[in-house]
Length: 284
Image 1 (cartoon, helix red, strand yellow):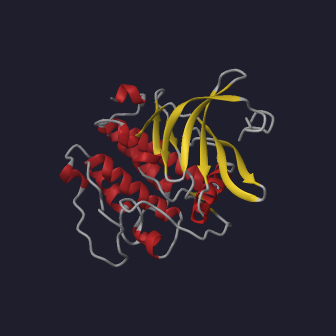
Image 2 (spheres, rainbow, N blue to C red):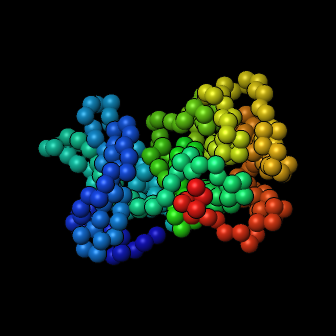
Image 3 (cartoon, helix red, strand yellow):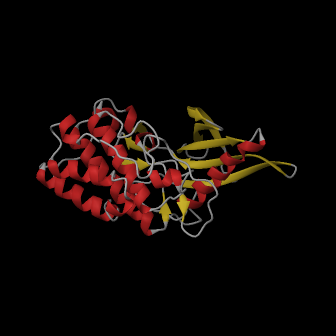
């Protein structure tokens, strides 16, 4: 992690707004430039307009706290947080983030299978680092995985993460990617992240969702094999994705190290060991 002397802070930075990168429920993300040197950052501004908007403030705090435990090239940095108050009432928060110049996985049109395999190898490496540090993402999906123009994967959005040892009142996720026990038992751990990654790989390799909605524990499911939909997918890769999506968490891969090792074997079998990951613009 960066030392305190080199980490940018909101209190010391004078910046100008370059443009708006996006907006969602309760927040807007701006691209900003430091007036001293011109370096670009992302600024997430979170608003609390109603009492129920407290969830967005909680997510901002979680994103900052989780990121402070992490230091990996495939994980976007969160540098600082500023809680905004009016008198003694919290009205919002600002998060200073690493600016990632690229596209999310679901914004890349028709990515090559070989490039997806290389990307997911980086994702598994980053997730293994997170789990070693006691952080679990909780909402891994294509829109939370970015590819830079330089060909580097970046995981983003840790607002729904769980940090080991910290009480978590809410467990959230996206219906098409959430694990059954994550939805029913409010659990976020290594095995739920494995499931989220499996659902993400299934989506990207097949163009289909593994599940249209939140899966029910104990329910039967007929899931089409990945290589039946996309014959270019090797058997070893097909088996990995389906294993990650097992409704029984005990039958999934034990962790991201195991997934990374399998993906390394797939990379070798596909002859991709000397192939570089293309940048986001090159992929299109």
